[in-house]
Image 1 (cartoon, chains in turn yellow, cyan):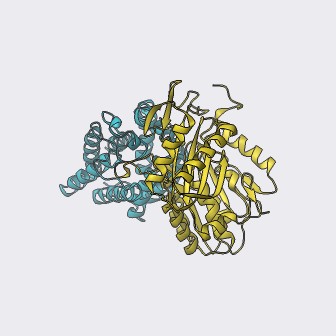
Image 2: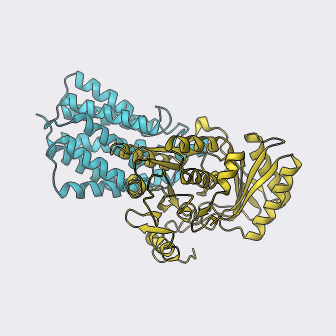
Image 3: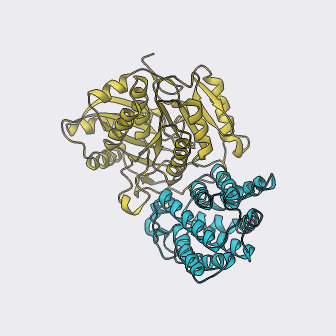
Length: 333
Length: 209
């Protein structure tokens, strides 16, 4: 293992120190328990939007703290959920009478720790609700598993509910919007190489030179199937088909297309894949009206990409275009 | 004779000792079907519980369990932290301000713990989780109590049933937690959470004798 680290146990805190130094105008970082809040928190008379989860997926979630997106992010250890006391600290630092919405990716540990935090907050008379995102189409049968995982759709969800809270929507409206977005966003991911978790020191899985893990999650856990490496055209077609057929998306739909690098895939290949996906969607009569391309939800240095499609309408388009001012997503300001 | 706060703290210390002793075994079980952190996380959590109790013993058994609950919730992480934390928290709430526990209170505390774990984790018997150990343990505890057993007998019955329940997870396909993504590949492995539940109840029972 060759990484730019000191002590594996200190990776998260040391990385947060860098984030704080780089973006002191936007965020404030607190340690032990670790949480990142907007520099101007708490914002009066506004629903707080809070998310978090294991570290190693940056810029998710800490890079999305700021005006128009998250009020707070709670980073856990690498690939491990934060504990409820850390989530509680983030709630206390940001949440007032309008309440808070917790955006939770559907992993057992995240769901349990965030729901426990919400229950503890309720005991203090704060109105804190949670919405679970499960956009990963790779998990086929959610009746017999912990359910579909939360992946790329999380980035879009955080932007949209953050914009709704910023324009003054109440907690009921923000929660309703969040559930609507969860209902119409779908993703699929692939891996070409495994990530190496610092405290493990070994790659999370073995993948042969000629193999691709299709339907990967963001922690190096297994995907839907292992396939022989193939051309970008064939691979992206396989990905687009999996996502489009799931919702399903159909002719005449307006969509946001999010092509994400898992960390190790360079921009050149990410844009290459994005171009193919745009063409394949056009072939199906699906109109791409908004785009996001780049490394926004990663799995350390894993090579791979994910594709996320969100069905758009006028309200979602307006919320997507609204100003956002965070370390890693910034427009309209 | 009932169980006061000091006895409950002793029982928890025995639990911490057993987790430390079986840490490597729990890590190995979790490496096979999960992310290999169960033994480490639980050991860190119980060590913190013992430290908290060393710092000052609360007055009632319920208050002792509440210290264990809040400590486990903040120190364990993963799925086990909130699940074990909720179990102890619900038991503590059920016991209220009682200064001593009789057999009925022990059985009722165990039932409240199970209800909390089921409410939080939404698992049923047969999903290959800690519920497979805890549910039969609670049934056995209630039978022992209605047969006239003392608190130690109630815990002993629970421990025996929990061990059987943990062993019963070996041929099961996991349907909750990270192991569920493996589908049938989880067959042939004891569930780490069910195993740690059985180990803890065994330690509690032996300490209460």
